[in-house]
Each structure stands twice: as structure tokens, then as C-alpha cells.
Amino acid sequence: MTIAPGDTRQLSTLSRLGLFGAVDLEQCSELLVKCSSKSLSPGQMLLYKDQVNHSMFVIVDGHLGMHLQEDASAVVILNPGDTVGEMSVIGGQPTSAFVIAQSNCKVLEIPEKLLWEFVSSDLNFAKNLMKLFVKRMLDLNRLLYQRLHDEASSKIKAEKDSATGLYNKEWMKETLPYEMTRCAMRNRALSIMILKIDRYDNFIHSYGSYTADKIFQAVANAVQIQLRGMDMAVKHEEGCIALLLIGTDEIQAENVAKRIHKAVNHLVLGDQKLNEKFTLSVGVAEMADEDYADLLIARTQAALDRATKEGGNQTSH
Image (tube, helix red, strand yellow):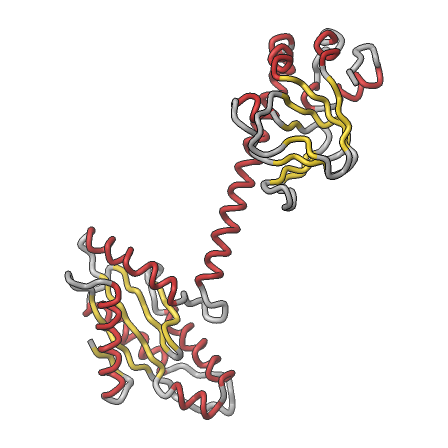
């Protein structure tokens, strides 16, 4: 079905759409005659992803959805006055999404050749097209930013323990070799510290896992308060926290350990039944030239074992 230029009702409808705002439709009548309209039922496909496309479509009535996967939810809903297909026409690239009718929908199809004739014949049409193109680019940028933000948030949630905010061991396994290489290239120090809550197994036995978890959370919070923004804390083992200290040598790490010992020694839980003083055994190792990630962790663990065997509540290196 063609758009008859003499049809006052249809011309009035087109004039309310953004692309034709302030456009002299009577003057463009010869071009409008060559355009056609399409009616789509809900669920009907207008454009397939990665197809070659030579037409721009203007939504006259109804709603279209842009889908990155055919069976997935729409990432963008297009309303009357919105356009689709212009990116592939202007850019000369295959379509980037599936476009599916979300309701009964009517669209005006403008083939590529006619699109450029409209641009040449009416300055307002050219301006409107440019505005729509810029809007589409901004919408896509916002969508991309939101997707990246969501992915980053999901990754952080996967990497961190929700109760304590500590990174997990898998994160440490992936991050430590990179940070060691980066510090070696910049001639910066790097130290690993592993802290173990003394008598943690006894706390589990005496008070149960729930209370022991609360103790661990309180200690983890006290530890993290003592760290700088670049330092990273990891849930290492049950009752143990590992610290990745960037730009910190062994002497500086021992000073960090002193602050942490003091903070944990003064820690008080608001549980009337739990009348305990908390202490830590701490192992520290500074990265050496011959170290690789597993060796550095093993040296730190050995230092922790020495601190534990010597009675706890102390730091060993």
C-alpha cells in the first residue's frame, strides 16, 4: 500500500512524526508516492540481525523491539516517530539487531535511494534525520554503558564474598601474577600477608558456625579499615584472610600487621555470651626476584605456620 500524497489524514499523521517535522510534505509528494507502508502483527520480524538492509523504517503506529538475540527480551523499545534501519543504510553495514513487532504496528518504508532524495530535496528532513541519528547513537552508547556497568557489577559480586566484602581465592589466583609482574616492571615492592584468627576452630566448637561466622566478619571489617585503597583483602581459608599489599615492603608490611593486631585485640562483639579477646597469627613475605605467585603464597603460608606454632598473637616473616 502506498502513501497517497493527497490523503490529508495520512499527511497529517506523517507531519507529527519527528522525521517529517517541518517538512513540506506536499512538495515531497512525488517521493512519498514511492514509499510504502507495512503492517506487522505482534511477534512478526521486520529485520533480522546481520542481514543486508537497504531501507529505513519509520514507526507510524505501534511499537517495535530491538533484540540482540531472537528469543531474548528487547533491549530497546521503539515508539511512533522512531526510526530503525537507518544505521545499516547510512553505515553500509549489516543490521546489528533483530527488530520485532511488540504490538500491531505500522511502519513507513523508505528505500535507500529515496532516503537520499528526501535529504537532497528538503533541508528540514536532513536536519531531522541527523537528530534521529545522533539520538540513536546516544541511546546505543547509554545501552552499552549500562551493559558494561551491569557486567562489571556482576563480576564484582562473583569475585567478592557478600558477607565480608573480601575477594575470593579465584580472584587472588588470577590477580596476583599480574600484580607481581606489574610491580617488578616498575621496580615496586609487593608483599603478601596471611592472617589467621587464633583458636578459630575452638570458636566453632564452642559457639557454633553462626557465631564463628560473625567473628570472622567482625575481624574482616577491622582488618579492612586498616588498609589503603590500593590494598586488597581476600578470604583465604576458613578463619584466614590474605592481604595483597602493593608498593609495600616487608618492614612496611610489619607496621601494617601491628595496626591490625591492635585493632583486632580491641575488637568487642555485641554478644553477651561471647566474652573473648581475639588475636591473630600473621605471616608476611615480600616478593623476591625469583618468586612466582604460588611460591610467594607458599613462603607467606610458611611464615604464618611459624607464627602459629610459636603460640600465635604475633607476626612472622
